[in-house]
Length: 259
Image (cartoon, rainbow, N blue to C red; front, side, top):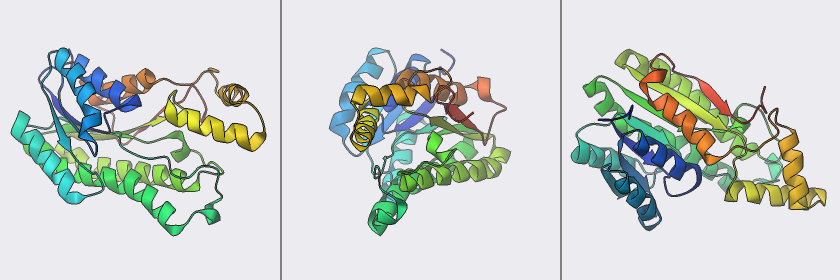
C-alpha cells in the first residue's frame, strides 16, 4: 500500500487505461476523486474503488473549461484535505487517416484543446494545493506519436508533442516546490481505440483487421500490443515515491516501437 494516505484526481477514469490506472492507484492505497463529463459512466469504476476500501468521490468536469477544473480541485480539497496526485488520462484521438491539410481548422483546434489545454487547466488548478502542502505528483498520459511523427495523425501527433513540452516546462517550474511532473507515452493499447485504428488501417490497405493487427505488432521489439495494465503500472510508478527523483521525463510504454 505504497500510496496509503495519499489522495489523487484522475481525469477520464471511466474505461480502458483510465479505469486500469484508477484501480492501480486505489489498490496501492490512494483515495480518489474521479472526474469526467459523463458521471454515470464513472459510477461503476467508483464502486470498484469503494469495494477496495478506498474513499472515492465523483465529480462532473469538462477539462477544457477552467471553471470546471478549478471546481474539481476544490472538490478534492473539500473531500480529502489535500491533493497528492493528478493523473491526466482524458483525451481524444482526433481524425484518422487524414493528411494535415485535409483537417479542418476546427478538427485541428479541438484535439489540441482537449489534449493540451485540458491538461494545462487541471495542472493549473491543483498546483496551489500542492505547493501549500509541500509537494505532489502529476502524471500526464501522452502517446508515442508525441515522440515520433505519424502520417495521417498530424493533429493528434501535434497535441501529444505539445503535451510533452508542457510537461517539461511545468517540471522545471514546479520542481522547486517538490512537485514532480512526468509523461507516460503509451503506444497502441488493446481496446476500442486500437480497434478503430486497426479497422482504418485494414480498410486503407485492403487487408483484414487481423492482418492489420499482426502488421502493427511486428513494428514493436516485443511483438505485442500493450494492455491497459501495462500503462497503469507505469503511472503508478511515477505517482509513487519510487520515482521521487524523476521529473520532466517521457516514459514510453510501447513494447519497443520508438527505440
